[in-house]
Length: 318
Image 1 (tube, rainbow, N blue to C red):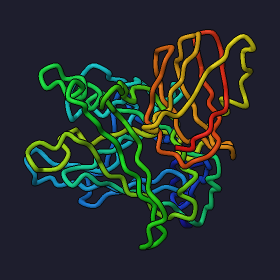
Image 2 (tube, rainbow, N blue to C red):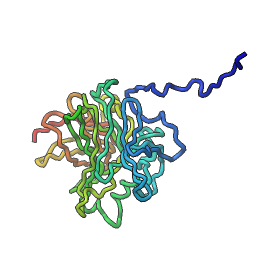
Image 3 (cartoon, rainbow, N blue to C red):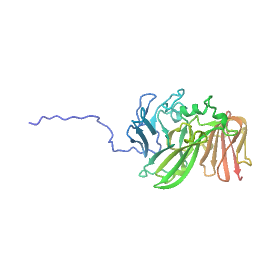
Image 4 (tube, rainbow, N blue to C red):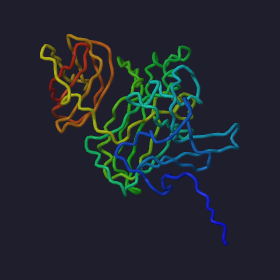
């Protein structure tokens, strides 16, 4: 005589303990209202995407609440100047995708993520895409402060750890106006991460020369990241080279890599002889002079110009 009823909801929902491992972490599994973001409001918060766990800190007693660490967003605001705008200056995720991550490295200039070693990803020839947030891009160009005119420099240092042991570290140049440089990462740019092999955590640190006042880097300590674990773009191998185009390249005594082409150069890609992308910058000139700190050896230069692809080899023996 027991009443024959039962309740059911969310038929077809995914097991909350199930982890959808993918080699490329693109954040597209998160649902957001248009032009919004999400971060944890736990004191020590996290969110997870595939094999990565992103950390953050939240303090609701700090004024109107204080947050630092990682958030995910689909922001498209390329106009608003301010810390509450977590949008990439590119106006979308990489390759016009919706979602991506934005990181604020906080007062201490650091943030971190954990790599789940249960899902091993071979990072050979892999990396991630980075871009400046709108806030930082506009800060660099602030006409009242004129950092660009004062040889402004800002980068994000990534340190990889396996347990407590440091594996390696690299700096990602996000903005550089030193000497003859005129660069800021306003477009999604591939960054090689093949060197993080065997790491189980990454720490991100703001680095720069805007340190007036003695409280560390004054530059807003933000960056945007997307498509973590993606294969390096096959610009040199995967695209045909225009037979009518040639590019000249050489290293000068100061170690600068100098390029010249009869067509205006839009993007420069530098590969080592193993095919790894070691540097990528966007420019808009027939002649380019760029800082390069690679080891001695042969490199492949691939340039996307207004009239097609051009390529050459150059030896760094400075």
